[in-house]
Picture: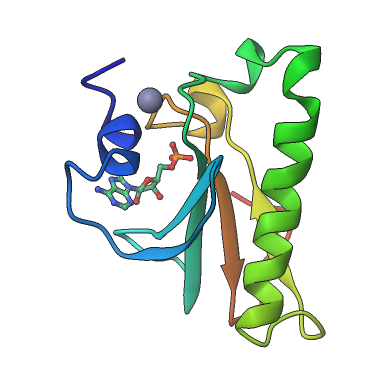
Length: 114
Ligand code: AMP
Ligand code: ZN
């Protein structure tokens, strides 16, 4: 998946603002932020959609969620609250087909989402 946008970002081929990274995950600032904190937690390995996850990815997905919680805590939003979102395919508005977890914080977020 050499031409996938997020594969290129995690390889460092496209400039981005890295929030946090480890051996499996990279969190970046969303280019079009929808809240004062809007980060994307991206696995280094290419997985197109949630439909492509297998049982072997369970630990990876859990790690993505805890990674986001760690960023929220680091930024001071743990108590106030934050939202995590995983969009899958057309009706959810997925626009980049490499899974990523949105982390949004810093304002009151409406529910239900649009
Ligand atoms: P989704 O609609 O769930 O697929 O989310 C894709 C997200 O990627 C959107 O919130 C975009 O603003 C964001 N995005 C697209 N291109 C970039 C980029 N080059 N750097 C950071 N975020 C991006
Ligand atoms: Zn990719």
